[in-house]
Figure 1 (cartoon, rainbow, N blue to C red):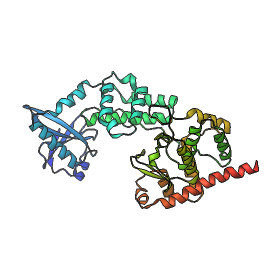
Figure 2 (figure 1 turned 135 degrees about the vertical axis):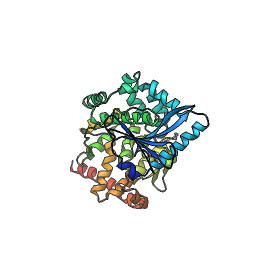
Figure 3 (figure 1 turned 120 degrees about the vertical axis):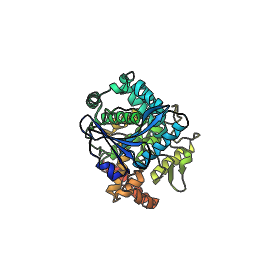
Figure 4 (figure 1 turned 30 degrees about the horizontal axis):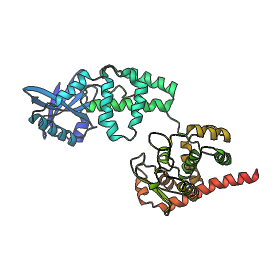
Length: 389
C-alpha cells in the first residue's frame, strides 16, 4: 500500500497508475481534508471521506472517478462532514444497503427514489422487471453474478427478441448503478456485457399499399380507431400522445396541435394538414368529451386499438406493419418530397445534440409546407391507384 498527498486535478488523478496486485494505493487531497482517492490493482479509482465518527475511523464512499468530478467529490465530502458534525452517521444507511438489501428491496428503492421521480416511462420499469426478474427478488444483491446476467440476457434474446433483451440489460445495469450510488460497495454484474446488435426498423407504407390501406380504413366499423389511425398517419405523432389528445390542445384557426409533454420531456407543436383538420372538425361536432378519442378505459380515452389494426391489415392484405410505422410513413414521404433531415426531425419531435441548435431556429412554416406536401403525396398515390382500378 502506498500513500501520496497532492492537489487533486483531473490530469493528476487520470495519470495515477494501478496499484500492485492485491493492494490499493491512496491519494490524499491537499485542499479538502479527509478526501481520499483509492486506486485498486485493477485501476478503479474511488473517492472516499476518511473521518472519525463516534470515536471510530470510518470510510464514507463518495463515488467513482471520473464518473464524479473532483469538484463534486469535494462538495460531497463537505456535505458528509456537515452530517457528521450534526450527529448523523452516513454509514448507517449504507451498511443497511450492503448487509441486508435483497434485489426486491433494491428495486423498490429504485422505483421510489429514482424511476418514478425522474422517468416518464417508470411503468415500463415496473412491468418488465417484475415480469423477467421476480425470481431474484428474495436474493441478496451481492449474490447476483455477471455470468447470471449474461445467461439471462441470452435467454431473453432467444425467447423474447433482441430488443427486449437489451432493454432488460439496461435496466439491470441502471438498478445496480443506483445501489452503488447509494452506498453499496459491490461491483455491477451487468458491467461489460455487450448488447445485441439491433437492426433499425425502416418499414413504412409503400405507394402500392396506400390505396389498399385507405380502402380498408374506410370499411373499418370502429370509427374512433379509424380516425385515430388517420390522425396518426397525417401528423406523425407518437401513439401515446395521439391516444391522449385533448380538444384543449387543438387550435383550429392556426391548424396546430400543442402537446405539452412528449417522450423527450419537451413540448411540441404539430402542424395539422387539411385532411387532419377535416377529421377533427367532424369529431368535434359530435363530441361531449374533453378527449378527442374517448374510451371506456380507466384513463377516459381510447385504449390501444390492436384488434382494429389487425382487421385493417388483413382487409388490406398488408403484412409486417405496426402502428408506430405510420409515424415513420409521414417522415418517409416528407423525405421523398424534398424535406431535409432537420425539417423531418422538427415535425416528428425528434431531439439530438447535433440538431438541437438548428431546431431552435426553425419556425413552423417550413414544417407546415413539408407536412402538406407529404400528406398530399400519400393521398395522390391513393387517388391514382383508384383511377387505374
